Image: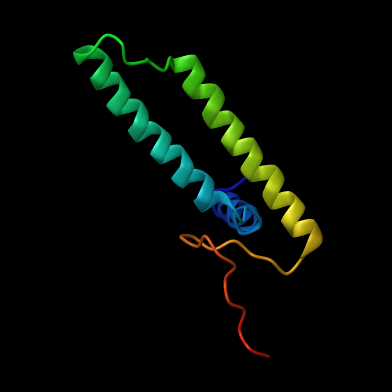
Length: 95
């Protein structure tokens, strides 16, 4: 498959992942909390530490939830399209 065809395939797929920006925001917040906890566990031994395996499981669960949620949304509303940076329903142009 050529690079141009792969681009259009991914573009069509990303339009269907409506909740991708929300899921990525959740993952970034989790990574920030993990970084703070890792630093704090070095300073104070009582602070819990999140392991790499736990992080990978959390990230995989969020991505699966985003994919399933987007799939359900597209099945219910076929005109729904994902837009980067939107958390709420994007406005549709007036007909």
